[in-house]
Amino acid sequence: MGHLLSKNGNRLKKRKRKTRKKKKRRRNCFLQGPCMLCFIVHGNSGSLDDDRLENSATRLAERYVALSSPEDCAKFLLSPQELAVWEGQGKSLLSSVPAKLIGPQVLFRTALPTQTPGDYSEMVCKRKCGEPRRSGPCKQPRCAFQEAVENGGAGDTGSASMHCHLPLCHLPSSSSSVAGLHAKVGQSVGDTCNAMAVPQSSASASSCPLACSDTPGGFNALEVPDNPSINQLPSSILLKVFSHLSVKERCLCASLVCKYWRDLCLDFQFWKQIDLSGLQQVTDDLLVKIASWRQNVMEINISDCRKVQDAGVHALASRCPGLLRYTAYRCKQLSDASLIAIATHCPLLQKVHVGNQDKLTDHALKKLGENCRELRDVHLGQCYGISDEGMVALAKGCLKLQRIYMQENKLVTDKSVRAFAEHCPELQFVGFMGCSVTSQGVIHLTGLKHLSSLDLRHISELSNETVMEVVRNCRSLRSLNLCLNWSISDRCVEIIAKEGRSLKELYLVSCKITDYALIAIGQYSSTIETVDAGWCKEITDQGATQIAQSSKSLRYLGLMRCDKVNEETVERLVQQYPHIVFSTVMQDCKRTLERAYQMGWNPNSSTPS
Image (cartoon, rainbow, N blue to C red; front, top):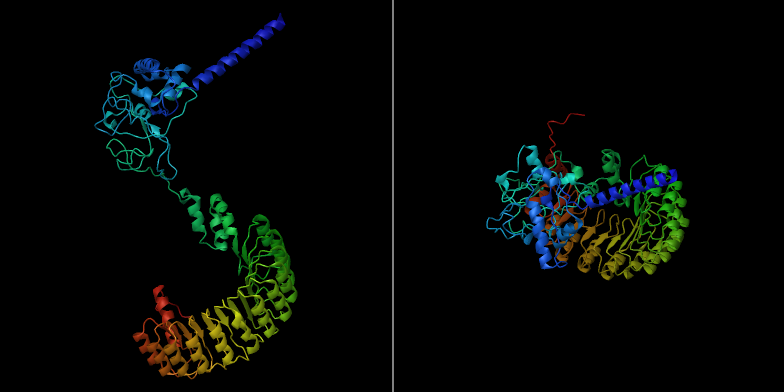
């Protein structure tokens, strides 16, 4: 007997539990939202016959209009069949309600003064806006009837002409969500939900769920948060703002503002290109952390980082196989081990700038030539341990090379120049400043059809014939630097002006030229825009005046320390030809003072040193 009682007791408990579940499931069918009037259904009728639809709609309407107080509204329950009729019919259900049961402009406030009692086309709002309007974080909309109850009365009838488009309301879990409903037959049932709105034209007011007509009883402006903050901007905009900051500014300033900014500063796009140049705080440990933290580094610059050793560069290279550009100027503490690690672990490398590293040898260049077939830009200036052996291996391995620059590499001779000219046909920029190169090596550059910039400064044995031959054959040449070559004469400059059809920049600092060279440039060239003839002691007022008068393309004329050119002549040329920048000691000082005045500098406010 006890067993049976206990069993029955369990059955009762289970039955009660099931009953509660049924009630809860039934209560889930209630309409959810700030009030019942916010409920909007989408769908086409077709599952019920016309007679059943009219009878069901009439019964629902009769029950609905019989509500006279909020307490009655709270007790307004729908059976599953009635709910199916309500949800299945949507707009058709509302249109089937007899007009005598629903007075004009009662259930919904409308902005259309000519709306008829039977026209319910504006009752059904669109769930999605055709043209969504972006806005910042806002407060949630409140039910107007709740505000009216809080104010001690029914809804304001003066604002009954306002029509709001609201999003679709959901079904609630209890009947308490509809306890604030106030309804009367033939009269205003109350205010509908006040949604956050922006002023729009009548043509587009029905296409956006946030649109509301401009009426005295409502608001027509976007609700602004009480405390607007920059953090309310989309993260994409903040990332764009932070992209204009340097790594130091992002790490030491912006990331310390808040956690949100810190997370933005850690975005992967900021760590694809890392510029740590000149930061003495950079050590191997920092490079290891960056490599382990962000393995998508594509470019890094550690120039002048004196505390970085080979171990740190090796750790970075091993964790960043996608590295494309590596720059390490004046890192004299680094040796071949760092560049070998880069060449071994980063086969996609395209740029290597390691100027002024005394410990680099040919062994590192051989590794670059073997592994980095995509290399396009190499700068090895003032790496005094590099010779022709490493340069030839680099030229044979990197056939896509476009830029090669050497400076004061005394062990690099004509053999290297010939190797690059033969194996790298895509070369566009070539520089062998101060190397042990002669005309016999330079003449091989005539085969480079894409050559656009040539730097032959301080070449001890450079003949005029070689330079003229290079200009004749390299038709794409735009910049030619012949500074510190005493062998360059007026005849060579004249041929350059005649044959250089694409030439725009010509540098002749400290060359053995006279006024005839400047006159020839102004007479024969229609493309040269920049001419620098500084420290040419034979240049006089005549040459400066003639080139300024005859050249139609000249924009810059360098006359620094041309002692035979009077400053009065330069002043007159500045007034006559304002489109040309004349560079002398006095003119450069004047421009510097003008920039200082523009920036607010006052000589009277400066304190004496």
